[in-house]
Length: 44
Image (cartoon, rainbow, N blue to C red):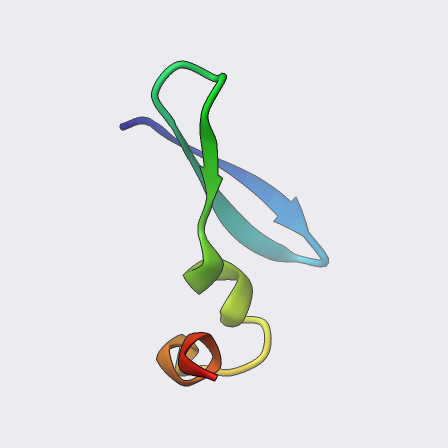
């Protein structure tokens, strides 16, 4: 699955896609802007 990235507020967020019709954004990358340990943010 190819990975593209976008930048939002200085943070790189991964976008995964197979055919550009079904895209998935990495929640872990987004959670990193709140905490250095994104696992805690995603669990909450």
